[in-house]
Length: 310
Ligand code: RIB
Image (cartoon, rainbow, N blue to C red; front, side, top):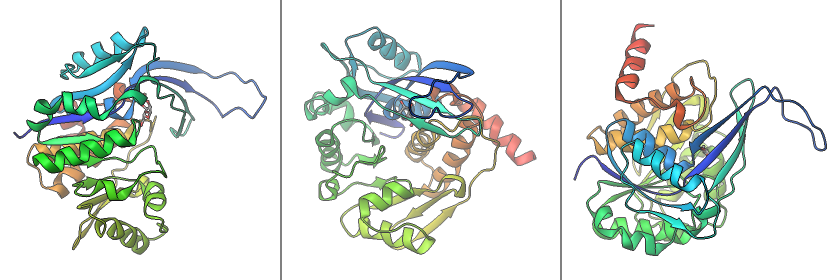
């Protein structure tokens, strides 16, 4: 069924400190601002897709602490089906201390907490929901076995799978991603996972094609300020960046992937979906925080109209 997306992935509570500069080791300095927000790559991608109108289900684990019920409620408030959100006894919820510098760039620590307990069994329990979806969306803040299981599930049941291999994990076994439809690394993740350089356009193409040669169908490489590249077995398409003044780049990659999955499941061609996702991510970096910076459909359309007129 079109327009239904399942996110099998993480949730975190983001502890965002806005700094003038990062402290040196052993140094204490004052920071001007702090914000607590809902994050986690999986939940961020789910919220982006839901705010754009997709019907989203989330398969995730929350902790047995004060953040768990709030995280579940936040997903529900965004219209996301939470029937496969599991609370893990005696585990903390995932948390992410984040530091944002004045130019909008960030540094992130993640403490997986309950996310480390998301298991292949959770996928099996959600099987009927997942089979009814158009897309299963995955990241790497949960155990690799769970990711492999979801990719195999998607291939077995004809549900497209999208994997954003972030944060990069050198232990990933690419042979267990056989049949993955969309692999979406950034340049450094692509270099790590392919074992090849990515320091030129030709190198990126060769590295991506090496993954396609190992059973991954399509690769989308995000290139930061240089846009993105869609690479298939026989084509390579450059997606131009959208220029904006960044306030906070945290969660921009998740805005890109979550919106791409929504546009793709909504019937856009892959190139159209990527062009629109590029705009959605550009809008996200003009606001503070992760999910707090994600537009709904009306806000996104207004941003696109403003881009056309500038
Ligand atoms: O990609 C941004 C996200 O990474 C943050 O929301 C943080 O929770 C970490 O998962």
